[in-house]
Image: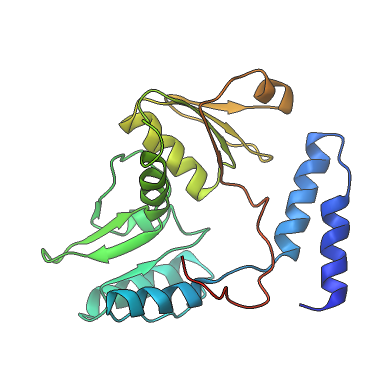
Length: 220
């Protein structure tokens, strides 16, 4: 990135906000300004470590008909066994696949589609699997009080998963208006957020993402 972009990003980060509307605008500005991905590097390393073939290709999907065409191509190609899905298509893709290989049928967002030997296509959310495995190494998840910062694809899916599988009481805080369900409580403001005590806090927001000028030297 150039110095001008770097300066603009710092100005947005340092901008003070006094209410929810200003915070929402700040987050939107940061989302538009920041560019971040090490996906190509990660897939290359996964391919090397597992001795499996992974191809990293980005297919732009502008509309639902284009998504359908891509999905049909996936079904017809026997060597095409799976792919990752990004927003805004994490909920739409579940309508096309044969089965949801996830604990909850109520989960609105999935991020991976793959084929099994039975010839059917399945969807799953690997964000949730990664979060679960990471937390299980450190804490018993059963009936914990959980705060999730960010109600997007990863955050909302994690909320549904933890509430249903581990009977957790889950709170979500997001600068955008979202709807909760079942055991998930949406926190309307900072005052309400601060009035609760939490066993686990998960950052699933865009805050904390940063530029990567080059891939990290060590893969972990």
